[in-house]
Image (cartoon, rainbow, N blue to C red; front, top):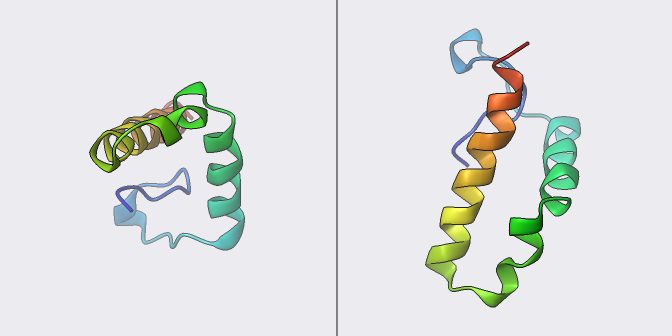
Length: 63
């Protein structure tokens, strides 16, 4: 995947763990864009996932 999902910068060497992945998936299912993604092509779903991943990670950049 294109993100660390941990709230830490990659250069800090933090690995993605199951709890972080679970938090991301839980958050992802709550996003309206993702809830409607079954209606779209694989290309569009990939774009949506990329956008939502960036949105999720941006929440951690302010901490």
